[in-house]
Length: 336
Picture 1 (cartoon, rainbow, N blue to C red):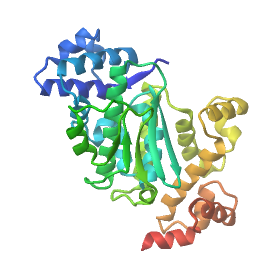
Picture 2: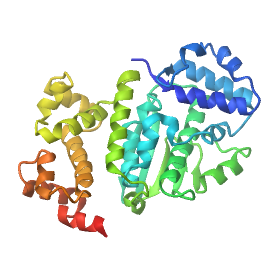
Picture 3: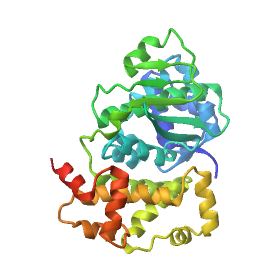
Picture 4: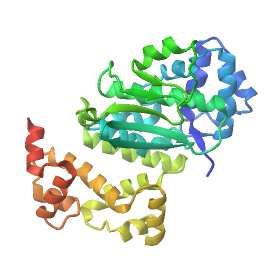
């Protein structure tokens, strides 16, 4: 399947040009794009067309901070159910995991990673295909600004990360605007674009946290991607596990079969994606467990069965391994 960009990206650039008094439709035509083919949110714009359009748009805007101008027009609803689902994430860690899982809704041109170490965490991305220097610089600026904007929606308007890294070279004509927007250390000329946050921030409870609504939006995103773009296998497995766990029929073989794969091909493709069935199973079970535990009408034993465990003691041991607390201790903590 061809690499592509969410229609909303083209629409946002178009709107930004129009706000500056530029004939955006003429720029679109000059880029060789038939706008009548991309007039619905479900449409995807081929990478080579978006690349060409961006280069022309940036040139004609004459705006050194064009990426920030575009991001200023975005809100959580701009990216379908993904933006809204991010706000419902339980913690900043869950926010980053959800963003990485479904980043292909925004574009399939980049590999996204969320990593942690003793000093903090980094949410980063790098291109999977060859792109023009203009597009790479724009995407680096825009994605970093977008992620920080969504974090600020989720936590607080004045949230400050430790650092952001941008691929663009340092330039006097953008320093003031970038310093004001990011309000943190900026690394220019970075090989990998990313945003760095303190480790202690990862477990901050987000004000709009709602695991049930987050999971509902995840399902909507997966269904949307299945209709419009390629869906990462880990995201498809996550969706299948949510569907299959309550029945107990969620073995590696059964999940592979539901995705029309042999067990060996399933294992190999997950390995190539940098994960495994067990990692995804643990991640999904942990997320669902925390959601169920918040609902006091569901007993710990019932939760164990809903997650495909044979008994509550096995579930309790697994939950303590994931969270450092027993299910009952976690429930009491959530009640405080």
